[in-house]
Image (tube, rainbow over all chains, first blue to last red; front, side, top):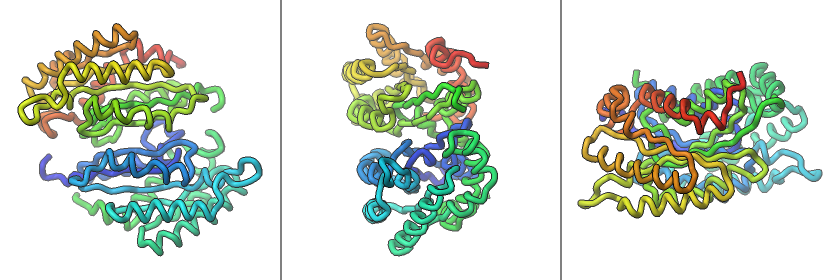
Length: 204
Length: 204
């Protein structure tokens, strides 16, 4: 299909990027790439979500893994999404202090923007009201950071906290990750987002 | 689902592992993991296929990428599949000499077997009769190597070379990669394989 635009995308982040819990093995990232394929784009889909990873873990490995997959000669894009694991309490405090989360995100996004078109999707909520407050707070700070860096940012913690599908699937599953319907709902949010649609204008 | 076996798998290889060309963004790897999920396994699916990579590229990066994704505390598995890119002619000779392909594969599989359950799926054919002969030859040598190392090996080059679906999709697509039906056919071959079935006995 030589007439198709050929785009390679890396999704970099945590278990929610991986799609953990989805029996279809697509998650939101696979669903939106499949939709782009059906919209007549040739998409090469690289999923670089790793369970348990914080912003610090991602800061230390994203560049190497992305460079291997996106040669400069390609039409290449990166989507980041992380933060939930930063807000998990271990030994009486968050795994990553919010100010360090922002520092890590600033470093990641600043480096990425130098050479690549970048989007960021905020951290999603889980089935824990207290942690969700920390996630919402961090999401707000990440949104402000992205605005300053001119990286399009999609806030999802608010909408999904009120989603019966997302929250009920997370409760039934493992307390954090939804299953197919939850990921489909998140995929819908990203697909309706102007920044994502800007990458994949309708080709009918 | 606390009663479900929780298994994390890395698939390491090239574009055929990535699922390049599949508009469903599953490839054969996503399809067999989705089937295992529907067989009541909790599968965490890590796809580490990279386009254009040879056995030498994979030798240099597999361990680092797998270690990040498979902590020793997990039930962890690795499936390798590579070799097609080794057989591509560039500047008048194969990108990787067959004897070096085997050396690379021996190093990868020997290291991997020390700490992980490992399977290997042979390289698939493409829409080029001459290169297919080199792929079939390499596949035979990889099979012999795996037998010596006691790594289960699945030969697919022969069966898929005679598959009308695989070859016709590769021709229509880009000369190498099939689309959804071809990957589904390869997924069937792996799912019928005793070594894969041994990892995922029927849980009804």
